[in-house]
Length: 149
Image 1 (cartoon, rainbow, N blue to C red):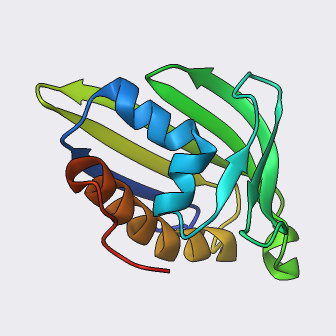
Image 2 (cartoon, helix red, strand yellow):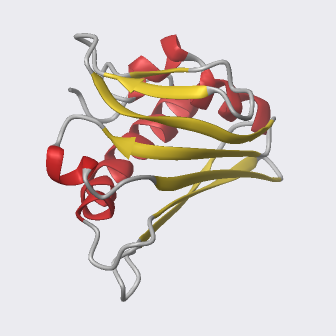
């Protein structure tokens, strides 16, 4: 959903997995390539470290900084688009990934927000996150992705 100001996108999914396995899927570049359409993140997952999301051809899609990495509970990224000038001009957004164990499953909440009403960046990520997270859920639960690149 997008809030009335258009500055925030929140997506919640429940995945039959463990918090540790979900953390590994979110932070391991090789695993990420499987569900994120060949893309991967480059960082050491330490607060203050640079962070990049990289296309399969090596171009940088998004970049920023690891704000917080509390394994296996929470990741917060400072996030700016690097390949679409109109999105890059909006500056940095904040992406928070929260992991909460619930019995045999885990609740993953993604919140992507920016301090701009009507953000085109948030509009763009709101179309991507559901596809990416559907693939992630399918991969962790069945061993296969749902949507092919």
